[in-house]
Length: 89
Image 1 (cartoon, rainbow, N blue to C red):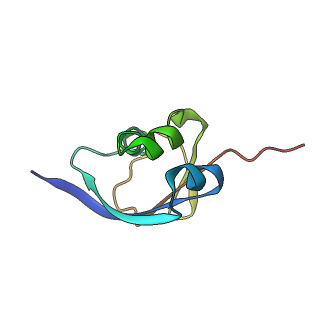
Image 2: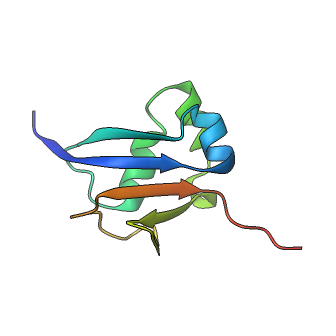
């Protein structure tokens, strides 16, 4: 079975709290090509990830410290970070 790239995933704020970790190094499954694909895959990794990624539209993402949209390709990425939207007030 083919696998995708090894990549560092970082989790911040309530995403980190629900996932139960701040970061990890993973090998992405074959076929994961965009940020949206990663978000969907993360939601299948167990109850804590299912809870953290239940509403992937709420999660903001950065690739190599650059904010990106869900349809952004992850090819060549070294790090993907996930965090909730910043609220002002």
